[in-house]
Amino acid sequence: MSFAQTIKNYILHDCRMDAVGIAPVSALEEDALHTPERILPGAKSIIVFTKRIPDGVIQAAFRRMEDGNRFAQSIYGAFGTDLTPNMQLFFMQFNIAQFIERNLGYTAVPVPSGPMHNVTQTNQKMPAFVGPRRVQYLINSERAAVAAGLGEIGWNNLLVTPENGPRVGIGLVLTNMELDYDKPYSGEKLCDPEKCGICSGVCPMHAIPDASELSQTPDWSAYYVQSQLSSGKKEIADVYMVAGKTCGTAHINSNACAVASMAFRKEFSVQGETEDLIMNNDPSDEELSEAYLKKAFSNTSLDHFPKHYCNKCVLYCPVGNWKERYADRGLSKFDGKEYMK
Ligand code: SF4
Ligand code: SF4
Image: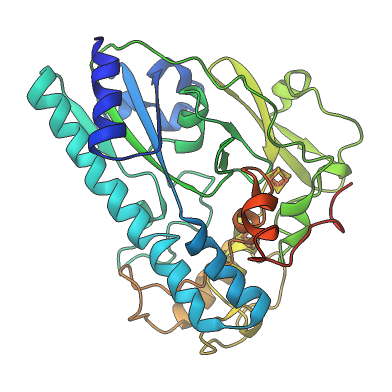
């Protein structure tokens, strides 16, 4: 059995992850600020694995959004976002690094890849996830997952997998061991934002541009040199390379997203303790920073900044048999038809 297969068996059977793939670090070289070599000199391989979020946890968020049961949100908060998925991925990443070092004799680094790598120091003005697509990650886990063959990056900027859509946690381990590599994802196209449009449509802050604002069906490779594609009025898409393939995804307004995700307005608060601090739909960094300092310190989350988990762009993305899992079982009334083109 190859070393790659030995590692995959350990991850799938001992660590009980749902999918695993391995990519050469060269697949991520275009993202110059976040190259694996900056974390591990001589890095050769990046091992990427996913753990699905249970349907019962996802539907708990629908109970709040669709039935007004705000207490159900705590189930989603604890088991669907940072706490349980990240803790589990953290421990598994640690175990996998131990497994490689003890049994195979190479150096291995567990790399935080979910919301928990945004743990905020108390002397920092803003939580690191504000502007998450800028510089605040160590390695772009979505791009690594695409390079390792696990799925594609959806218009919503998240990894979408054929089996579970974007409703997965991602774990990363970097090693200086050369391994057999998987091919980048080349399966069925999962996200067609010009036909779907659900993530843009459900976003309460209009933070995800509508792909139909693009004047024509994009051939991303033709746009690559521009790196950001504009409708003439605003930036619509980011265009970048992963494993030699050109990708285009929404240019998300992260500051606008923060207004909903962190409830800088009463309408986004789950627990009802929030003031209206930002009414502007396109706040500057300074406005966010100022409002953040006025927020009460949270005693309900590990990292102590208040989170309210909007995540509609994750919860309602149709990829991963959404209709069969939630609508057909009576777990959601959402049908998304008003947003489909
Ligand atoms: S909601 Fe639709 S457009 Fe958005 S990422 Fe999912 S499939 Fe793509
Ligand atoms: S989390 Fe909510 S506010 Fe942020 S991009 Fe997704 S849908 Fe929009």
